[in-house]
Image (cartoon, rainbow, N blue to C red; front, side, top):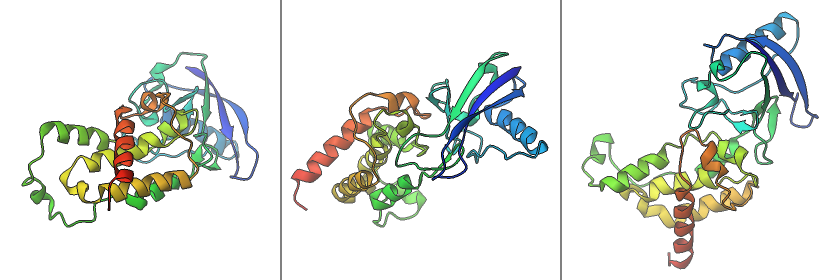
Length: 247
């Protein structure tokens, strides 16, 4: 397939960015990132700078492959990371526009690579359990209802890729923060710090400059793990109760 690419290029966080046009011949069986590998080989052979993009596992696990493809974070397939997208989704002669995450809290490092360390700082603020919980086998001795364990597992599936921020018109991080708060608050090990956790994580999110949630629902639609916006409702309840409760 002869594919036309319009890719965002930016040499650094303080430099102006621009779109650059390229053509690449792709096999339908290639993954999307393999297609970009072919493009970079062409650029390097021509003595030009390769396109910088994030990737790690290429198995849909880590979420490092963060890019907006034709206006959709991670591309057109629901519940799929960019590395699991294949070129058979496209046709000969198609034009594909590729951009980085667009959010003030995710400054561009180079080309398609953004700094997502804001998520790390939010996590460090309270997204953990500091009480002694024993070793892994000890967890099986604590009875947890199936509904609670299933729900906690669904929220724990968040990989922190930032697609929710990129999709939100407000660049809100509520789905990420609520997933982290929700999965810990539903488990016995996480209930000890639940009030402090939600306060600290919401405060950290606000300090990083993410926008507010206005219930567009784009975050859940773009999430490669299909995490429900129900997590945001749970976060709002946790935050309200933490504000009313006495420490």
